[in-house]
Length: 109
Image (tube, rainbow, N blue to C red; front, side, top):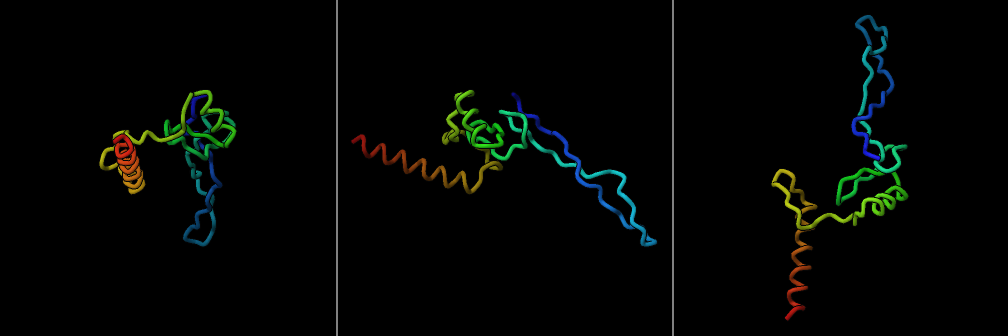
């Protein structure tokens, strides 16, 4: 089942105080976007797969996603990231990747 991005959940109406001190219900309720689990479609998604960005709600759905979509769940460490997308976590991961490559290259001699 495909992820339902943009499902809208209304929040409680806010009360707006008028100049005279009276409270009046806000005519437009606040809404927030909620992503639904891409596997079961029943619950709000809490997790995002590092490999394919599929949203899931539970460990059960994560495991089902990995099996059904043949996904490793691990980020592609050699994937290109543009500078605006690049984070400190990406830098840290890249450093570990380079250390792993160095370790394998040293072991090949």
